[in-house]
Image (cartoon, rainbow, N blue to C red; front, side, top):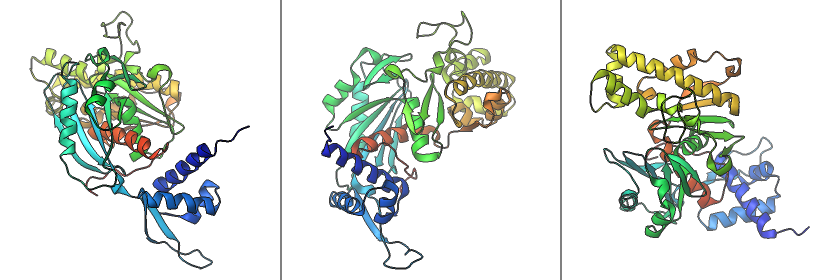
Length: 388
């Protein structure tokens, strides 16, 4: 058997860097114990990382109970680089600039627009240029751009979308042609799950249920993002809950998202209440003022989402389900309504929680993608505070 020394070296470097990031501050001696690599290898690789200014020494730690010289502690250098996250919604474009360690520097959002293949490249490039104008000194500058797409993605391609036509173009190629950085494309629900795993959760098996224009699920299985064949895992929004029900853009009838996605609920509320320009804020206000239609529709939404969550849990057996929904963030009582509709024995021990990252989850997940690619690591635990 031929052993590729370069591959082993790369694997060891990745393992050491992951341990520094996830357990910082950390000493070389502790790194040696945690990675089972000898001290010479650890010293050599940490020297390379220090020379590249990817990590830095931050002073002395505590000595052991046996005494002796205090160890020098290591941590990721947050100023090593930057990443740009762009969330491409059907009616908005959100962008953010992050340090490599996950600290958000700046965020912008453009609302009340219609996004489609004819204008998406210009909108994304404009957002990238806005982030470029924020002058932040770093070692390597901007290391990548991650695009969040509300649809199925696979190998940097948009495979299917319900609410815009970005699957009718090569988005990656067109953005790459106008950007000077590596470009990555990922499904927004997957990014939300990556964000929870990277920034907020200690669970290795989790689900993030993303309820926006459609409904998707990001799956973290044993610490890894699970996407299935051609990126189609987690498309719970296209599971049929009403046979021969409302037609869906996927070709089926009666899909879950046609009954309880944000777009569906707001559309139903506008129709039943006679109001125009209905937003989650409008629904929230009317709900707390006791509007019976608002209460009826949120109860309906909770019931249908409970069906979807039950199907997710029996399929993926997570420890926790995070819900990322603008409506539920504004009406948190809906979490208890959802739980009240979940009586299955399969739900025992499974937590149901609002996402702690909320509207910023997708952007944080996109940052995690760039950081993993740039540093060549698989597992990350980062902070999420702004302007550290």
